[in-house]
Image 1 (cartoon, rainbow, N blue to C red):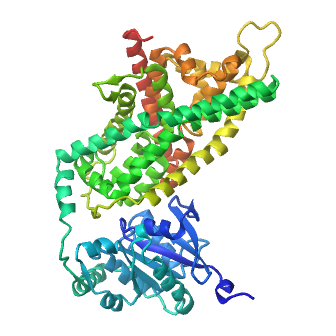
Image 2 (image 1 turned 180 degrees about the vertical axis):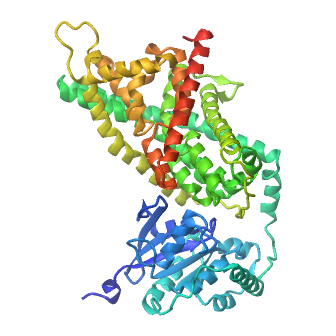
Image 3 (image 1 turned 60 degrees about the horizontal axis):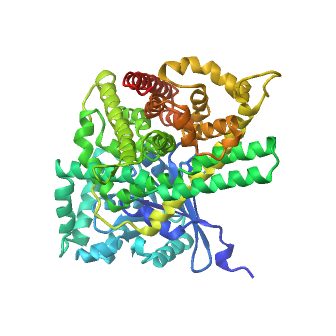
Length: 626
Protein backbone atom coordinates (compact mmCIF):
# COMPACT_ATOMS: atom_id res chain seq x y z
CA UNK A 1 0.00 0.00 0.00
CA UNK A 2 1.42 3.40 -0.98
CA UNK A 3 1.60 6.11 1.68
CA UNK A 4 0.46 9.67 1.04
CA UNK A 5 4.07 10.90 1.25
CA UNK A 6 5.17 8.43 -1.39
CA UNK A 7 2.29 9.28 -3.73
CA UNK A 8 3.17 12.97 -3.91
CA UNK A 9 5.52 14.16 -6.65
CA UNK A 10 8.90 15.46 -5.41
CA UNK A 11 8.43 19.08 -4.39
CA UNK A 12 10.99 21.70 -5.40
CA UNK A 13 12.35 23.85 -2.61
CA UNK A 14 14.73 26.73 -3.35
CA UNK A 15 17.25 28.25 -0.94
CA UNK A 16 17.57 32.01 -1.35
CA UNK A 17 19.46 34.54 0.73
CA UNK A 18 22.15 37.18 1.00
CA UNK A 19 25.77 36.28 0.20
CA UNK A 20 27.70 34.98 3.25
CA UNK A 21 24.50 33.91 5.03
CA UNK A 22 25.55 30.25 5.26
CA UNK A 23 23.13 29.25 2.50
CA UNK A 24 25.50 26.83 0.77
CA UNK A 25 26.55 25.32 4.13
CA UNK A 26 22.85 24.68 4.81
CA UNK A 27 22.43 23.14 1.35
CA UNK A 28 25.42 20.82 1.95
CA UNK A 29 24.14 19.84 5.40
CA UNK A 30 20.72 18.93 3.96
CA UNK A 31 21.83 17.10 0.81
CA UNK A 32 25.34 15.80 1.64
CA UNK A 33 26.80 14.04 -1.38
CA UNK A 34 23.39 13.70 -3.04
CA UNK A 35 23.86 16.81 -5.15
CA UNK A 36 24.89 17.69 -8.67
CA UNK A 37 26.31 20.84 -10.24
CA UNK A 38 25.41 22.04 -13.72
CA UNK A 39 24.58 25.33 -15.45
CA UNK A 40 21.23 26.95 -16.08
CA UNK A 41 20.03 26.65 -19.67
CA UNK A 42 21.51 29.34 -21.90
CA UNK A 43 23.72 30.94 -19.22
CA UNK A 44 26.89 30.05 -17.32
CA UNK A 45 25.43 30.64 -13.86
CA UNK A 46 26.11 27.57 -11.74
CA UNK A 47 23.11 25.46 -10.79
CA UNK A 48 23.35 23.27 -7.67
CA UNK A 49 20.54 20.81 -6.97
CA UNK A 50 20.30 18.00 -4.44
CA UNK A 51 17.72 15.62 -3.02
CA UNK A 52 16.74 14.73 0.53
CA UNK A 53 14.23 12.45 2.19
CA UNK A 54 11.95 13.82 4.92
CA UNK A 55 10.98 12.06 8.14
CA UNK A 56 7.69 11.07 6.48
CA UNK A 57 9.58 9.36 3.66
CA UNK A 58 8.90 12.01 1.04
CA UNK A 59 11.61 13.01 -1.46
CA UNK A 60 12.28 16.72 -1.90
CA UNK A 61 14.40 18.43 -4.55
CA UNK A 62 16.52 21.24 -3.13
CA UNK A 63 17.88 24.08 -5.29
CA UNK A 64 20.68 26.39 -4.09
CA UNK A 65 20.13 29.76 -5.80
CA UNK A 66 22.93 32.36 -6.19
CA UNK A 67 23.13 34.89 -3.37
CA UNK A 68 21.20 38.15 -3.75
CA UNK A 69 20.23 41.17 -1.69
CA UNK A 70 17.07 41.94 -3.65
CA UNK A 71 14.85 40.73 -6.49
CA UNK A 72 15.63 44.07 -8.17
CA UNK A 73 18.43 42.24 -9.95
CA UNK A 74 21.50 44.10 -11.20
CA UNK A 75 24.04 41.33 -11.88
CA UNK A 76 23.59 38.13 -13.96
CA UNK A 77 23.67 36.01 -10.78
CA UNK A 78 20.81 38.02 -9.27
CA UNK A 79 18.85 37.87 -12.53
CA UNK A 80 18.92 34.05 -12.42
CA UNK A 81 17.79 34.03 -8.78
CA UNK A 82 14.92 36.42 -9.52
CA UNK A 83 13.81 34.52 -12.62
CA UNK A 84 14.01 31.16 -10.82
CA UNK A 85 11.81 32.44 -8.00
CA UNK A 86 9.29 33.98 -10.41
CA UNK A 87 9.21 30.91 -12.67
CA UNK A 88 10.65 32.75 -15.68
CA UNK A 89 13.50 30.34 -16.46
CA UNK A 90 13.09 28.32 -19.65
CA UNK A 91 12.05 24.74 -18.92
CA UNK A 92 11.70 25.27 -15.16
CA UNK A 93 8.63 26.00 -13.09
CA UNK A 94 8.70 28.20 -10.01
CA UNK A 95 9.74 26.46 -6.77
CA UNK A 96 6.91 25.13 -4.61
CA UNK A 97 8.42 26.61 -1.44
CA UNK A 98 11.24 29.04 -0.71
CA UNK A 99 13.62 28.91 2.24
CA UNK A 100 15.03 32.37 2.89
CA UNK A 101 18.36 31.89 4.66
CA UNK A 102 19.46 34.74 6.93
CA UNK A 103 22.56 35.37 8.99
CA UNK A 104 20.97 35.75 12.44
CA UNK A 105 23.71 38.18 13.48
CA UNK A 106 23.03 40.48 10.52
CA UNK A 107 19.29 40.67 9.79
CA UNK A 108 19.11 44.25 8.59
CA UNK A 109 19.63 43.54 4.87
CA UNK A 110 17.73 40.26 4.57
CA UNK A 111 14.45 41.75 5.81
CA UNK A 112 13.99 43.73 2.61
CA UNK A 113 14.47 40.50 0.61
CA UNK A 114 11.95 38.72 2.88
CA UNK A 115 9.37 41.44 2.21
CA UNK A 116 9.91 41.00 -1.54
CA UNK A 117 9.42 37.24 -1.22
CA UNK A 118 6.16 37.93 0.61
CA UNK A 119 5.01 39.93 -2.43
CA UNK A 120 6.00 37.09 -4.79
CA UNK A 121 3.28 34.96 -3.23
CA UNK A 122 5.26 31.72 -2.93
CA UNK A 123 5.11 30.17 0.54
CA UNK A 124 8.42 30.60 2.31
CA UNK A 125 10.21 29.87 5.58
CA UNK A 126 12.78 32.19 7.14
CA UNK A 127 15.79 30.23 8.44
CA UNK A 128 17.72 32.22 11.05
CA UNK A 129 21.06 30.59 10.44
CA UNK A 130 24.19 30.89 12.65
CA UNK A 131 21.80 31.28 15.58
CA UNK A 132 24.46 29.97 17.98
CA UNK A 133 26.65 32.99 17.23
CA UNK A 134 23.68 35.32 17.78
CA UNK A 135 23.06 33.68 21.16
CA UNK A 136 26.71 33.99 22.19
CA UNK A 137 26.56 37.70 21.38
CA UNK A 138 23.38 38.07 23.46
CA UNK A 139 21.45 39.27 20.40
CA UNK A 140 17.75 39.48 21.29
CA UNK A 141 15.42 38.56 18.44
CA UNK A 142 11.63 38.50 18.97
CA UNK A 143 11.05 35.50 16.71
CA UNK A 144 7.24 35.40 17.11
CA UNK A 145 6.78 39.08 16.25
CA UNK A 146 9.23 38.84 13.36
CA UNK A 147 7.28 35.88 11.95
CA UNK A 148 4.08 37.90 12.21
CA UNK A 149 5.60 40.96 10.53
CA UNK A 150 6.95 39.07 7.50
CA UNK A 151 4.01 36.63 7.29
CA UNK A 152 6.12 33.46 7.31
CA UNK A 153 7.17 30.79 9.82
CA UNK A 154 10.69 31.10 11.27
CA UNK A 155 13.08 28.30 12.23
CA UNK A 156 16.42 28.87 13.96
CA UNK A 157 19.27 26.81 12.51
CA UNK A 158 22.98 26.15 12.84
CA UNK A 159 23.89 24.57 9.51
CA UNK A 160 27.44 23.63 10.51
CA UNK A 161 26.13 21.69 13.53
CA UNK A 162 22.99 20.37 11.79
CA UNK A 163 20.77 22.02 14.39
CA UNK A 164 17.19 22.88 13.48
CA UNK A 165 17.36 21.17 10.09
CA UNK A 166 14.60 18.64 10.84
CA UNK A 167 12.25 21.43 11.95
CA UNK A 168 13.14 23.49 8.87
CA UNK A 169 12.37 20.67 6.45
CA UNK A 170 9.19 19.78 8.34
CA UNK A 171 7.98 23.37 7.97
CA UNK A 172 8.89 23.47 4.27
CA UNK A 173 7.20 20.10 3.63
CA UNK A 174 4.04 21.25 5.39
CA UNK A 175 3.94 24.35 3.19
CA UNK A 176 4.25 22.29 0.02
CA UNK A 177 1.06 20.46 0.97
CA UNK A 178 -1.07 23.16 2.59
CA UNK A 179 -0.15 26.52 1.08
CA UNK A 180 1.36 25.99 -2.38
CA UNK A 181 -0.48 27.96 -5.02
CA UNK A 182 -2.80 29.76 -2.60
CA UNK A 183 -1.21 33.22 -2.91
CA UNK A 184 -1.16 35.49 -5.92
CA UNK A 185 2.00 37.42 -6.75
CA UNK A 186 1.98 41.19 -6.29
CA UNK A 187 5.71 41.70 -6.92
CA UNK A 188 6.78 44.04 -9.70
CA UNK A 189 9.91 45.98 -10.55
CA UNK A 190 9.84 48.79 -7.96
CA UNK A 191 10.41 52.46 -8.70
CA UNK A 192 12.58 54.74 -6.57
CA UNK A 193 9.75 55.70 -4.20
CA UNK A 194 8.81 52.04 -3.63
CA UNK A 195 12.44 51.12 -2.95
CA UNK A 196 12.67 53.85 -0.29
CA UNK A 197 9.39 52.70 1.25
CA UNK A 198 10.53 49.06 1.32
CA UNK A 199 13.81 50.06 2.95
CA UNK A 200 11.95 52.10 5.58
CA UNK A 201 9.60 49.18 6.30
CA UNK A 202 12.52 46.78 6.70
CA UNK A 203 14.18 49.23 9.11
CA UNK A 204 10.96 49.52 11.15
CA UNK A 205 10.65 45.73 11.46
CA UNK A 206 14.32 45.41 12.40
CA UNK A 207 14.06 47.99 15.19
CA UNK A 208 10.85 46.44 16.49
CA UNK A 209 12.06 42.83 16.51
CA UNK A 210 15.83 42.96 17.05
CA UNK A 211 17.50 44.49 20.11
CA UNK A 212 21.23 45.30 20.27
CA UNK A 213 23.42 42.45 21.52
CA UNK A 214 24.22 42.30 25.21
CA UNK A 215 27.70 40.97 24.40
CA UNK A 216 28.73 42.62 21.10
CA UNK A 217 31.19 40.79 18.89
CA UNK A 218 34.32 42.72 19.82
CA UNK A 219 36.63 39.93 18.62
CA UNK A 220 35.73 40.52 14.97
CA UNK A 221 36.38 44.23 15.41
CA UNK A 222 39.75 43.65 17.06
CA UNK A 223 40.82 41.18 14.35
CA UNK A 224 39.68 43.60 11.63
CA UNK A 225 41.71 46.40 13.21
CA UNK A 226 44.77 44.35 12.26
CA UNK A 227 43.68 42.53 9.10
CA UNK A 228 42.17 45.65 7.48
CA UNK A 229 45.09 47.89 8.40
CA UNK A 230 46.55 49.22 5.11
CA UNK A 231 50.10 48.18 6.07
CA UNK A 232 49.75 45.18 8.39
CA UNK A 233 46.76 43.80 6.46
CA UNK A 234 48.60 43.75 3.13
CA UNK A 235 51.64 42.16 4.76
CA UNK A 236 49.48 39.40 6.29
CA UNK A 237 47.67 38.83 2.98
CA UNK A 238 51.00 38.55 1.18
CA UNK A 239 52.27 36.06 3.77
CA UNK A 240 49.09 33.97 3.45
CA UNK A 241 49.43 33.78 -0.33
CA UNK A 242 53.15 33.01 0.01
CA UNK A 243 52.43 30.13 2.43
CA UNK A 244 49.71 28.87 0.09
CA UNK A 245 52.08 28.68 -2.88
CA UNK A 246 54.88 27.16 -0.80
CA UNK A 247 52.44 24.52 0.44
CA UNK A 248 51.29 23.71 -3.09
CA UNK A 249 54.84 22.68 -3.92
CA UNK A 250 56.15 21.19 -0.65
CA UNK A 251 53.20 19.55 1.13
CA UNK A 252 52.12 17.56 -1.89
CA UNK A 253 55.51 15.98 -2.63
CA UNK A 254 55.09 12.70 -0.64
CA UNK A 255 51.67 11.96 -2.17
CA UNK A 256 52.87 12.91 -5.65
CA UNK A 257 55.85 10.59 -5.30
CA UNK A 258 53.48 7.80 -4.25
CA UNK A 259 51.20 8.34 -7.27
CA UNK A 260 54.18 8.67 -9.62
CA UNK A 261 55.66 5.45 -8.27
CA UNK A 262 52.33 3.68 -8.69
CA UNK A 263 52.06 4.64 -12.36
CA UNK A 264 55.70 3.71 -12.98
CA UNK A 265 55.09 0.30 -11.37
CA UNK A 266 51.95 -0.13 -13.47
CA UNK A 267 53.87 0.71 -16.67
CA UNK A 268 56.57 -1.76 -15.67
CA UNK A 269 53.99 -4.48 -14.99
CA UNK A 270 52.37 -3.90 -18.39
CA UNK A 271 55.76 -4.06 -20.08
CA UNK A 272 56.57 -7.33 -18.32
CA UNK A 273 53.26 -9.10 -18.94
CA UNK A 274 52.16 -7.88 -22.37
CA UNK A 275 54.02 -8.84 -25.52
CA UNK A 276 55.86 -6.05 -27.27
CA UNK A 277 53.71 -4.53 -29.96
CA UNK A 278 50.98 -1.97 -30.59
CA UNK A 279 48.72 -2.97 -27.66
CA UNK A 280 51.50 -2.81 -25.09
CA UNK A 281 52.75 0.51 -26.50
CA UNK A 282 49.22 1.98 -26.47
CA UNK A 283 48.66 1.06 -22.83
CA UNK A 284 52.13 1.85 -21.47
CA UNK A 285 53.18 4.79 -23.67
CA UNK A 286 49.81 6.28 -24.55
CA UNK A 287 47.48 5.77 -21.58
CA UNK A 288 49.70 5.24 -18.54
CA UNK A 289 52.45 7.71 -19.51
CA UNK A 290 49.93 10.32 -20.66
CA UNK A 291 47.17 10.19 -18.05
CA UNK A 292 49.56 9.32 -15.21
CA UNK A 293 51.70 12.36 -15.93
CA UNK A 294 48.64 14.57 -15.22
CA UNK A 295 46.95 12.72 -12.34
CA UNK A 296 50.17 12.93 -10.35
CA UNK A 297 49.43 16.64 -9.82
CA UNK A 298 46.04 16.07 -8.15
CA UNK A 299 47.47 16.56 -4.60
CA UNK A 300 48.78 20.03 -5.50
CA UNK A 301 45.46 21.09 -6.99
CA UNK A 302 43.56 19.90 -3.92
CA UNK A 303 45.94 21.80 -1.61
CA UNK A 304 45.30 24.98 -3.61
CA UNK A 305 41.52 24.48 -3.40
CA UNK A 306 41.87 23.67 0.32
CA UNK A 307 43.40 27.09 1.03
CA UNK A 308 40.84 28.94 -1.09
CA UNK A 309 37.96 27.15 0.67
CA UNK A 310 39.40 28.01 4.09
CA UNK A 311 39.70 31.68 3.13
CA UNK A 312 36.10 31.73 1.86
CA UNK A 313 34.49 29.82 4.73
CA UNK A 314 36.31 31.74 7.46
CA UNK A 315 35.08 35.11 6.19
CA UNK A 316 38.59 36.32 5.32
CA UNK A 317 38.04 36.39 1.55
CA UNK A 318 35.71 39.41 1.81
CA UNK A 319 38.35 41.22 3.92
CA UNK A 320 41.03 40.47 1.33
CA UNK A 321 38.81 41.95 -1.39
CA UNK A 322 38.20 45.07 0.71
CA UNK A 323 41.93 45.36 1.47
CA UNK A 324 42.92 45.07 -2.20
CA UNK A 325 40.36 47.63 -3.38
CA UNK A 326 42.76 50.61 -3.43
CA UNK A 327 45.54 48.68 -5.18
CA UNK A 328 43.16 47.18 -7.73
CA UNK A 329 41.43 50.53 -8.23
CA UNK A 330 44.80 52.05 -9.16
CA UNK A 331 45.12 49.39 -11.85
CA UNK A 332 41.60 50.05 -13.15
CA UNK A 333 39.93 47.05 -11.47
CA UNK A 334 36.89 47.13 -9.20
CA UNK A 335 37.38 45.83 -5.66
CA UNK A 336 34.85 43.09 -6.34
CA UNK A 337 37.24 41.76 -9.00
CA UNK A 338 39.53 40.38 -6.29
CA UNK A 339 37.36 37.33 -5.55
CA UNK A 340 36.93 36.33 -9.23
CA UNK A 341 40.67 36.77 -9.77
CA UNK A 342 41.57 34.73 -6.68
CA UNK A 343 39.09 32.06 -7.81
CA UNK A 344 40.97 32.01 -11.12
CA UNK A 345 43.98 30.57 -9.29
CA UNK A 346 41.91 27.39 -9.16
CA UNK A 347 40.41 27.73 -12.66
CA UNK A 348 39.75 30.73 -14.90
CA UNK A 349 36.31 29.40 -15.87
CA UNK A 350 34.57 29.81 -12.46
CA UNK A 351 36.61 32.99 -11.98
CA UNK A 352 35.17 34.46 -15.19
CA UNK A 353 31.70 33.24 -14.29
CA UNK A 354 31.91 34.85 -10.84
CA UNK A 355 32.46 38.29 -12.43
CA UNK A 356 28.66 38.41 -12.60
CA UNK A 357 28.75 40.04 -9.14
CA UNK A 358 30.28 43.15 -10.80
CA UNK A 359 27.51 45.50 -11.91
CA UNK A 360 29.39 47.88 -14.22
CA UNK A 361 29.88 46.40 -17.72
CA UNK A 362 33.34 47.88 -18.31
CA UNK A 363 34.60 46.76 -14.89
CA UNK A 364 33.25 43.28 -15.57
CA UNK A 365 34.79 43.04 -19.06
CA UNK A 366 38.17 44.20 -17.77
CA UNK A 367 38.10 41.49 -15.09
CA UNK A 368 37.09 38.83 -17.63
CA UNK A 369 39.93 39.80 -19.99
CA UNK A 370 42.64 39.55 -17.30
CA UNK A 371 41.30 36.57 -15.31
CA UNK A 372 43.16 33.95 -17.45
CA UNK A 373 46.46 35.65 -16.57
CA UNK A 374 46.08 34.40 -13.01
CA UNK A 375 47.94 31.10 -12.58
CA UNK A 376 45.19 28.46 -12.70
CA UNK A 377 45.59 24.95 -11.33
CA UNK A 378 45.90 23.55 -14.89
CA UNK A 379 49.27 25.33 -15.14
CA UNK A 380 50.54 23.56 -12.01
CA UNK A 381 51.49 20.35 -13.88
CA UNK A 382 53.53 22.38 -16.40
CA UNK A 383 55.21 24.54 -13.75
CA UNK A 384 55.95 21.61 -11.45
CA UNK A 385 57.35 19.48 -14.27
CA UNK A 386 59.78 22.15 -15.47
CA UNK A 387 60.74 23.36 -11.98
CA UNK A 388 61.34 19.79 -10.82
CA UNK A 389 63.53 19.10 -13.86
CA UNK A 390 65.66 22.27 -13.86
CA UNK A 391 65.50 23.94 -10.43
CA UNK A 392 67.58 22.22 -7.72
CA UNK A 393 65.70 20.93 -4.68
CA UNK A 394 67.41 22.93 -1.96
CA UNK A 395 66.56 25.22 0.95
CA UNK A 396 67.04 29.01 0.87
CA UNK A 397 67.56 31.08 4.03
CA UNK A 398 67.33 27.94 6.10
CA UNK A 399 63.59 27.23 5.74
CA UNK A 400 62.28 28.16 2.26
CA UNK A 401 62.15 25.81 -0.70
CA UNK A 402 63.92 27.24 -3.77
CA UNK A 403 61.46 25.38 -6.00
CA UNK A 404 58.59 26.89 -4.00
CA UNK A 405 60.11 30.37 -4.43
CA UNK A 406 60.23 29.89 -8.20
CA UNK A 407 56.61 28.73 -8.14
CA UNK A 408 55.68 31.84 -6.11
CA UNK A 409 57.52 33.98 -8.67
CA UNK A 410 55.46 32.50 -11.50
CA UNK A 411 52.24 33.20 -9.60
CA UNK A 412 53.44 36.73 -8.86
CA UNK A 413 54.19 37.24 -12.57
CA UNK A 414 50.59 36.36 -13.39
CA UNK A 415 49.25 38.78 -10.77
CA UNK A 416 51.50 41.66 -11.87
CA UNK A 417 50.70 41.09 -15.55
CA UNK A 418 46.95 41.04 -14.80
CA UNK A 419 47.22 44.40 -13.00
CA UNK A 420 49.36 45.85 -15.81
CA UNK A 421 46.98 44.73 -18.57
CA UNK A 422 43.94 46.04 -16.70
CA UNK A 423 45.74 49.38 -16.24
CA UNK A 424 46.29 49.61 -20.02
CA UNK A 425 42.70 48.59 -20.81
CA UNK A 426 41.16 51.19 -18.50
CA UNK A 427 43.53 53.98 -19.59
CA UNK A 428 43.39 53.30 -23.33
CA UNK A 429 39.94 51.83 -24.05
CA UNK A 430 37.56 52.62 -21.19
CA UNK A 431 38.50 55.86 -19.55
CA UNK A 432 36.61 56.81 -16.43
CA UNK A 433 36.62 56.26 -12.70
CA UNK A 434 36.04 52.88 -11.12
CA UNK A 435 32.84 52.66 -9.06
CA UNK A 436 33.28 52.68 -5.26
CA UNK A 437 33.44 49.26 -3.61
CA UNK A 438 30.90 48.36 -0.93
CA UNK A 439 30.66 44.92 0.63
CA UNK A 440 29.03 43.45 3.71
CA UNK A 441 31.78 41.91 5.85
CA UNK A 442 30.62 38.62 7.40
CA UNK A 443 31.39 37.53 10.94
CA UNK A 444 34.50 35.38 11.30
CA UNK A 445 33.72 31.70 11.75
CA UNK A 446 35.53 28.39 11.86
CA UNK A 447 35.34 26.58 8.51
CA UNK A 448 33.19 23.47 8.74
CA UNK A 449 35.38 20.41 8.00
CA UNK A 450 32.50 18.53 6.36
CA UNK A 451 31.82 21.38 3.90
CA UNK A 452 35.50 21.69 3.07
CA UNK A 453 35.81 17.93 2.46
CA UNK A 454 32.64 17.85 0.34
CA UNK A 455 33.93 20.67 -1.85
CA UNK A 456 37.38 19.08 -2.13
CA UNK A 457 35.79 15.79 -3.13
CA UNK A 458 33.71 17.58 -5.78
CA UNK A 459 36.86 19.22 -7.20
CA UNK A 460 38.74 15.91 -7.20
CA UNK A 461 35.89 14.27 -9.12
CA UNK A 462 35.91 17.12 -11.66
CA UNK A 463 39.67 16.76 -12.19
CA UNK A 464 39.56 12.96 -12.48
CA UNK A 465 36.53 13.12 -14.79
CA UNK A 466 38.38 15.67 -16.91
CA UNK A 467 41.30 13.24 -17.12
CA UNK A 468 38.93 10.51 -18.30
CA UNK A 469 36.84 12.52 -20.75
CA UNK A 470 39.43 14.89 -22.22
CA UNK A 471 42.95 13.66 -21.51
CA UNK A 472 42.39 9.93 -22.10
CA UNK A 473 41.00 10.20 -25.66
CA UNK A 474 43.53 12.89 -26.53
CA UNK A 475 46.36 10.64 -25.37
CA UNK A 476 45.11 7.85 -27.63
CA UNK A 477 45.12 10.36 -30.51
CA UNK A 478 48.63 11.59 -29.61
CA UNK A 479 49.87 8.00 -29.40
CA UNK A 480 48.46 7.30 -32.88
CA UNK A 481 50.07 10.46 -34.27
CA UNK A 482 53.42 9.62 -32.61
CA UNK A 483 53.37 5.96 -33.75
CA UNK A 484 52.12 6.06 -37.33
CA UNK A 485 53.19 5.90 -40.07
CA UNK A 486 56.17 3.64 -39.57
CA UNK A 487 59.56 4.86 -40.92
CA UNK A 488 60.32 3.92 -44.54
CA UNK A 489 62.84 1.27 -45.53
CA UNK A 490 66.41 2.39 -44.90
CA UNK A 491 65.45 5.22 -42.55
CA UNK A 492 68.28 6.18 -40.20
CA UNK A 493 66.62 8.69 -37.84
CA UNK A 494 64.34 7.96 -34.86
CA UNK A 495 61.03 6.39 -35.87
CA UNK A 496 58.99 9.21 -34.34
CA UNK A 497 60.56 11.71 -36.73
CA UNK A 498 58.61 10.01 -39.56
CA UNK A 499 55.31 9.92 -37.67
CA UNK A 500 52.42 12.35 -38.11
CA UNK A 501 53.42 14.04 -34.83
CA UNK A 502 57.01 14.43 -36.00
CA UNK A 503 55.92 15.84 -39.37
CA UNK A 504 53.40 18.26 -37.79
CA UNK A 505 55.93 19.32 -35.16
CA UNK A 506 58.45 19.95 -37.94
CA UNK A 507 55.99 22.29 -39.65
CA UNK A 508 55.31 24.27 -36.47
CA UNK A 509 58.86 24.36 -35.10
CA UNK A 510 60.19 27.14 -37.41
CA UNK A 511 57.55 29.52 -35.97
CA UNK A 512 58.64 28.75 -32.41
CA UNK A 513 62.38 28.21 -32.93
CA UNK A 514 63.12 31.91 -32.15
CA UNK A 515 61.79 31.32 -28.62
CA UNK A 516 63.81 28.12 -28.13
CA UNK A 517 61.07 25.50 -28.66
CA UNK A 518 61.92 22.11 -30.21
CA UNK A 519 59.34 20.12 -32.18
CA UNK A 520 58.20 18.14 -29.12
CA UNK A 521 57.44 21.38 -27.24
CA UNK A 522 55.72 22.77 -30.33
CA UNK A 523 53.48 19.73 -30.81
CA UNK A 524 52.49 19.79 -27.10
CA UNK A 525 50.86 23.21 -27.53
CA UNK A 526 48.20 21.90 -29.94
CA UNK A 527 46.33 19.40 -27.71
CA UNK A 528 47.14 21.77 -24.86
CA UNK A 529 44.44 24.02 -26.27
CA UNK A 530 41.85 21.55 -24.94
CA UNK A 531 43.29 21.90 -21.44
CA UNK A 532 46.67 23.27 -20.38
CA UNK A 533 47.68 20.17 -18.42
CA UNK A 534 47.30 18.05 -21.57
CA UNK A 535 50.62 19.54 -22.73
CA UNK A 536 52.35 17.57 -19.96
CA UNK A 537 50.50 14.40 -20.94
CA UNK A 538 51.50 14.97 -24.58
CA UNK A 539 55.16 15.35 -23.65
CA UNK A 540 54.88 12.17 -21.57
CA UNK A 541 53.45 10.20 -24.49
CA UNK A 542 55.76 11.65 -27.17
CA UNK A 543 58.92 10.99 -25.17
CA UNK A 544 57.68 7.55 -24.12
CA UNK A 545 57.10 6.60 -27.77
CA UNK A 546 60.46 8.12 -28.71
CA UNK A 547 62.27 5.96 -26.14
CA UNK A 548 60.27 2.77 -25.43
CA UNK A 549 63.07 1.31 -23.30
CA UNK A 550 62.92 4.31 -20.96
CA UNK A 551 59.12 4.62 -20.75
CA UNK A 552 59.15 4.19 -16.98
CA UNK A 553 61.76 6.93 -16.54
CA UNK A 554 60.47 10.10 -14.89
CA UNK A 555 59.49 12.66 -17.51
CA UNK A 556 61.34 15.40 -15.60
CA UNK A 557 64.60 13.43 -15.91
CA UNK A 558 64.05 13.04 -19.66
CA UNK A 559 63.46 16.78 -20.11
CA UNK A 560 66.47 17.79 -18.02
CA UNK A 561 68.68 15.73 -20.33
CA UNK A 562 67.12 16.87 -23.64
CA UNK A 563 66.15 20.52 -23.06
CA UNK A 564 68.44 23.45 -22.40
CA UNK A 565 67.77 25.63 -19.36
CA UNK A 566 67.01 28.57 -21.67
CA UNK A 567 64.34 26.55 -23.51
CA UNK A 568 62.81 25.39 -20.21
CA UNK A 569 62.61 28.96 -18.89
CA UNK A 570 61.10 30.07 -22.21
CA UNK A 571 58.46 27.32 -21.91
CA UNK A 572 57.58 28.58 -18.42
CA UNK A 573 57.35 32.18 -19.66
CA UNK A 574 55.03 31.06 -22.48
CA UNK A 575 52.69 29.38 -20.02
CA UNK A 576 52.49 32.44 -17.75
CA UNK A 577 50.63 34.25 -20.54
CA UNK A 578 49.35 31.81 -23.17
CA UNK A 579 45.55 31.27 -23.36
CA UNK A 580 45.96 27.51 -23.79
CA UNK A 581 42.40 26.54 -22.90
CA UNK A 582 39.55 26.43 -25.42
CA UNK A 583 36.84 25.99 -22.71
CA UNK A 584 37.92 29.33 -21.19
CA UNK A 585 37.48 31.08 -24.53
CA UNK A 586 34.07 29.42 -24.93
CA UNK A 587 32.96 30.68 -21.50
CA UNK A 588 34.13 34.22 -22.35
CA UNK A 589 32.02 34.04 -25.50
CA UNK A 590 28.98 32.91 -23.51
CA UNK A 591 29.50 35.51 -20.77
CA UNK A 592 29.95 38.40 -23.21
CA UNK A 593 27.56 37.06 -25.89
CA UNK A 594 30.14 38.01 -28.53
CA UNK A 595 33.09 36.47 -30.38
CA UNK A 596 34.90 39.83 -30.19
CA UNK A 597 36.15 39.51 -26.62
CA UNK A 598 37.44 35.91 -26.75
CA UNK A 599 39.22 36.87 -29.99
CA UNK A 600 40.77 39.93 -28.34
CA UNK A 601 41.78 37.79 -25.35
CA UNK A 602 43.37 35.09 -27.50
CA UNK A 603 45.33 37.53 -29.68
CA UNK A 604 46.71 39.69 -26.88
CA UNK A 605 47.67 36.70 -24.71
CA UNK A 606 49.44 34.85 -27.54
CA UNK A 607 51.33 38.06 -28.36
CA UNK A 608 52.34 38.49 -24.70
CA UNK A 609 53.34 34.82 -24.45
CA UNK A 610 55.54 34.96 -27.55
CA UNK A 611 57.17 38.23 -26.46
CA UNK A 612 57.83 36.97 -22.91
CA UNK A 613 59.23 33.65 -24.16
CA UNK A 614 61.42 35.42 -26.75
CA UNK A 615 62.91 37.83 -24.19
CA UNK A 616 63.36 35.06 -21.59
CA UNK A 617 65.08 32.71 -24.03
CA UNK A 618 67.53 35.22 -25.44
CA UNK A 619 68.39 36.72 -22.04
CA UNK A 620 68.99 33.20 -20.69
CA UNK A 621 71.20 32.33 -23.69
CA UNK A 622 73.15 35.57 -23.27
CA UNK A 623 73.74 34.64 -19.62
CA UNK A 624 75.11 31.25 -20.61
CA UNK A 625 72.03 29.10 -19.99
CA UNK A 626 71.69 27.95 -23.59
